[in-house]
Length: 417
Image (tube, rainbow, N blue to C red):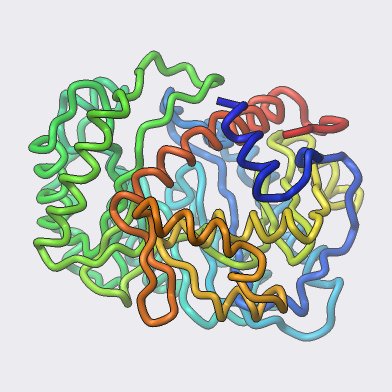
């Protein structure tokens, strides 16, 4: 797998040089001139740990939670105080973990953010099914959250057993959600599980729509090397067939595809914490992407808090991009939305997309991966599958390696990918 990603990296970056992450970091982040800046806040606490989940998470303990939030608020101020005035940002997302299970201090976190940033396009938060209660939903609504994402994964007891998830009451969830008019109600589902059929996945989608979803995210199961899961992903032939069938099903229902894995009732309904040109991440394991730099915070809560207690940022690894590396990174994550606007690329880099990647565009057109529509390159269903196919290699070659190391070492010396 690493051969494919390495060859692709060398071809696109026009260099044999790998992506090199080091433990050197800046105490200030140059975000003030970044356009379309987003914010992400990581709350790593859960009631229990799902064995397939690769993200940074901890069992909830009140004392640890309070210690963490104290440090999180201080990190926000450490970053925000480095500039004067309040920066306009597109959006704010809370992820985890199960951030909605521990919202007693969310207002304090928001106050810290509001003191440095102006949110223009709304706020989203991930929610565990157990947290769909009137009390929690009312609190989130009062705090002005506009988007929620519920991690269902599957309504089917067979797949709940495979994923070691407990059953939940979908009727109760539906009853609660009908009382609140969130702009986006997204339901997360997992596909490509062992023996999963199109009918299985379609039934999950239908139930998600029945409980009030207007946005569906269907993420492929990925078998990370460092998780405790013994579930194996579906083979590529069956996965491709399943993805094509569910995509066709959504189109026939009049849904629009808003990203590789997401479908919505209209273009205006979106939930994505990752497709941003630039973003700041706060909290352990949170990442920050700026014009010339990418950094990731330590996965260790204790080391995170120790760093911040000394008024230092909790950065674990940083890469300072070459210009070409930044272009490749930009295109990889922009393509996640299934389309690339050459005008946006020019605005960001000051050169045309065709000038830098004309050959790759011609090859993608020839292979049927993209089409040009009103001067925008749009991914075909075939292109979407092969993007997924490559993303799977990328995830296991790069993200799996990085996160696996960072779960063991709070501050690695160096990482080459």
